[in-house]
Amino acid sequence: MVETLRHDVIIVGSGIAGLRAAIEAARVSAGKADIAVVTKVQAMRAHSVSAEGGTAAVLYPELGDSLESHLFDTVKGSDYLADQDAVERFVSMMPGEIYQLEHWGLPWSRREDGRIAQRWFGGYSYPRATYAEDKVGFFEMQTLYDTASKYANIRFYQEWFATSILSEGGEFKGITAIEMKSGNFAQILGKAGIMATGGAGRLYSFATYAYSSTPDGLAAAFRAGIPLKDMEFIQFHPSGLIPSGILITEAARGEGGVLLNRDGQRFMKDYAPNKLELASRDVVSRAMMTEIEQGRGFKDEASGLDYLHLDLSPVGGEKIKSRLSQIREIAIKF
Image (cartoon, rainbow, N blue to C red; front, side, top):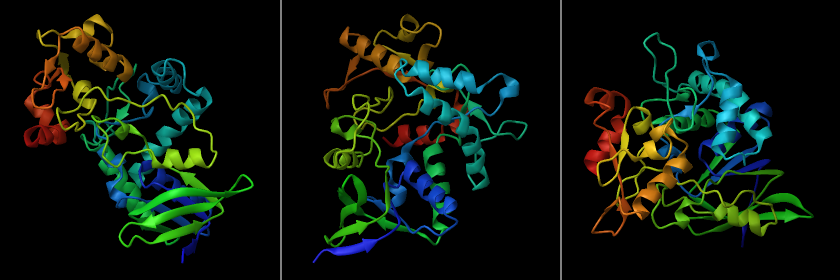
């Protein structure tokens, strides 16, 4: 017999998107909506926890940044393929989100005057990456999970694997899911659903994504007839450890790290002479692949993987310890 559970709103995925959606649904409904968060991992194991370097927002227009600049940098960084209405809304909402996270308890790193600190990231024309050392995803997840836990009307189904979307006449009716601990199969019925299941990076054998970053949510949506958009765009992060694929944050370059080929040359000057290592990620990734394909890379003999060097010595020991402490720890351990 299939167990039947009922909620008003069903959110599949417990990363930053899913948790923020759950909190907003609870807030907008003044606590009246019965909300389920269904996640195939323990909630704090969502891959959002692995984000490291920063979250973009215009916090200091009086110092030269602007919403227009953030909007243009984002659209240009997408090779003008982004949904510009969505980008404009995103850019305008982000400053408020940064301050909201602070009010909920996120310990943002500080400038000397005590205000929230920001740093350079790729493709920016202003240092607007808001950071908490190099553990931004962990702190954002911890803050959102703690906040969501305060709402009595948000119920977590942890380690429940959603298998399909139920619909009738084009209307959302719920999902089916397997409770992984028991193997029991259930249908969770609801009035509204949000798919927040993240990316598909683990389609590739070498990636900076967690092993849980598989496209089950995208596949369920596709089978239910929900249109999928821009499926060719899977982000490849330029920097990760060989052979594990553990992410090395873009902040490593934002703080002064440089990319070097086998000849010891800082090759980004040939591809993006103005931005260098802080060109947008697709530009840096393509430049690295060009260097490797033209024979100026290294090869890891054990795994057969090609790679280049990210040299952090220009950053300096003290800044590495204060701003890239997790990267230092990862490098030592792995």
